[in-house]
Length: 240
Figure (cartoon, rainbow, N blue to C red):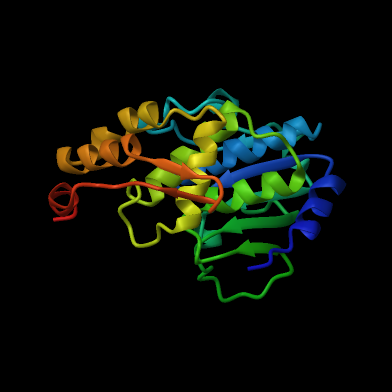
């Protein structure tokens, strides 16, 4: 699928101040994709604020860059001319719009959910429901920006992918998903640390299956594939 990345890049270049926001009760994909994109924009010299009004869930405390997230915005920050909304689905769930409904500026959306808003608007939307997560799309966009993916960005994106795929157990997991996950690991993302944080909410069987999947992961550079082998009995138990 072709994305309108050039238009998104132009909107970012023209913006004097950018607010990034995700959905209410944010998860690792929403926060991870937000922090990863903000880190890339900062590398481009853009002035940004990541916004989430409530304390993050404790299981997301390991995400690098979380200290940049602001629970309140100053009057100067609210004069932003671009909002980047990530992984929110509906405007009614976008945190910046819930807290500051009167804020009027251009909206750029990255999402893997179809919007359920009926109102037609002129906002720029990068949406692909065939992707496992918004983090997958942001991975492609950061590469389009030609911003080097460092350990911080890689960790945030891999956390989002692991969370939204149920640690690669959901049907949304594709060969592309696994290939991106493998590349993020080569950039310094530590899947063990991510799983350690997230498996607090996972059944023991699923956590074991995930660990085995990563332990057996192999990369075929010639074929451009990342693959793994998991014991059938173990994966069966993890999906019961």
